[in-house]
Structure formats: C-alpha cells, structure tokens
Image (cartoon, rainbow, N blue to C red; front, side, top):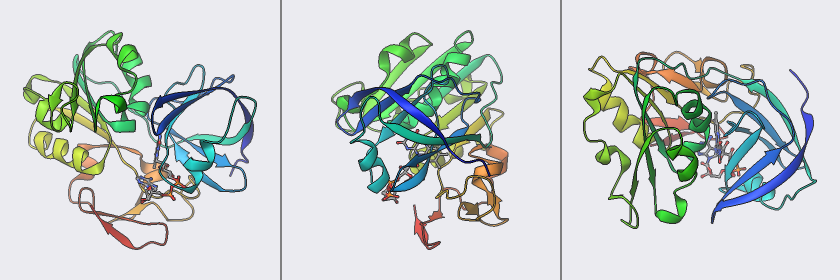
Length: 253
Ligand SMILES: Cc1cc2nc3c(=O)[nH]c(=O)nc-3n(C[C@H](O)[C@H](O)[C@H](O)COP(=O)(O)OP(=O)(O)OC[C@H]3O[C@@H](n4cnc5c(N)ncnc54)[C@H](O)[C@@H]3O)c2cc1C
C-alpha cells in the first residue's frame, strides 16, 4: 500500500454553510468517480472523490471528526493523500442524465466536464438554496434543473420527483444519499437505460485488504470493485437496504 504524499492546500473556499472546497497545486492522474484516501493528520484517514482533477480539488461536507478537523485547515496547511483508487464512470450513449444529491454532485463534476459535448442534462437536489453548489459551473456543461426540499429554489421536493421523463435518456449517472440512488435504480432497473451509481460504504484501507467496505451477499469490496457500480452489479445486493458502520454493525437505510 502506498504511503500518503503531502499535498499543500493552495486555497479554501466556503461553498455552503457546511461545505468547503480545498484547492491544491497538484494535478492528479484520476478518472471521474475514482476516490482518494485523505489523511487528516492526527485524526483519521477518509475517502473523498475529487471534484476537480486538474487542478486537484476536493469538496467536503462537515459531518464528523475528520471533516470537522479539515474545516480548521487553511491555505499553506498540508493533507496526506494517496490514490486514486477504485472504478470510474464510463460515458455511454448520447442523451445523458447526471443526478447529484447534496455534496454528491462534487464527484460528478469531472464527469459532467468530460460529457459536456453530449446532450447532457444535470439534476441537482439539495435541502435548500444555500446548499445548491457549483450551479454556474454545471450550467456551462449542460441543461441544469434543481430541486430543494424547502422549495427555496426550483422544484419543491426531491430531485427524483423533478425528472420529467427518465425514458428519454440513454444513460444515467448518480451520486448522493442512498435513498435517492435506490429510487433512481428502481426507475431504471427494468429499462434499457445504462446506469452507474457512486456508492458510499465505510472505507478503511482503500485497497481491498481490510474488508470494512464489503457488501452482501458476495463480499464485493466497494474500494476495489466500486465505488462506481452499474445497475446490473447492484441487483440482489444490500444496496438500498443497509450498510455497515465503522464497527461492522448493520445500519438500515
Ligand atoms: C468513495 C467515497 C467518496 C466520497 N467522497 C466524498 C466527497 O467528495 N465529499 C464528502 O464530503 N464526502 C465524501 N465521502 C464521504 C466521506 O468519506 C465521509 O463523510 C467521511 O469519511 C466522514 O468522516 P468523519 O470523521 O468526518 O465523520 P464520522 O465521524 O466517521 O461520521 C459522521 C457521520 O457521517 C456518516 N458517515 C461516515 N462515513 C460515511 C460514508 N462513507 N458515507 C455516508 N455517511 C458516512 C456516519 O454514519 C456518521 O453519521 C465519500 C465516501 C466514499 C466512500
């Protein structure tokens, strides 16, 4: 397993009350959807998918110990980074739909950039208008529609309800809360639409050794077999039902 390299933070930008973007000087040789292991020194090492590859950027939602510590970092501080790891998105078809929920839009940005010459629609869902991040950048890549749960911008409700006609798309790419992903999976499962989903599980080693991100029923390791899965790979798995916490106990979704 590689040791982390030291990456100097060039800039930190506040994108939403609990979301920050960290910009680095480096470029990383990653494909859209792959992830990095970010070592927050003295605290923990956590998975993050780049929101930009050239230059490297990561976009972080503050949820727990490691991400709270990251929020205290400033320009000139260092993070340890190893990777990239895992599978990536593959652009298929001409009429493409990308759906991001909350900070889940971040790993889809490099994909949207790559697919910008296609007939691209992008759905972005968030709790409220303050949490709708990267709208300007996304509007440069395709037709954007938004939803907020409180109705402060766009459709009032979930982004899955704001998709008018899913059958008109050749392919779907999604990242966000698992209930959102599972709803989309159910909508495309019986169709010819090609679909890929970026899943989250508790990742510890990132290289397929420790087993913390294994999924039922066959022990698929999210860190090496995923985090990007096609809809076919997710049929009859734990997806949409439960995942494991840091101690291996089931957390029902
Ligand atoms: C492949 C991959 C890519 C990711 N990319 C990003 C990204 O670009 N930006 C970003 O902000 N986050 C991303 N995450 C999620 C991020 O890794 C977790 O938010 C982080 O590990 C939480 O660490 P913590 O110490 O701050 O919180 P913890 O103290 O570990 O947890 C705090 C809360 O967050 C929940 N949580 C922890 N880990 C996860 C997880 N993997 N998925 C869902 N909920 C979790 C816990 O259940 C708990 O409720 C990604 C996760 C994976 C697996």
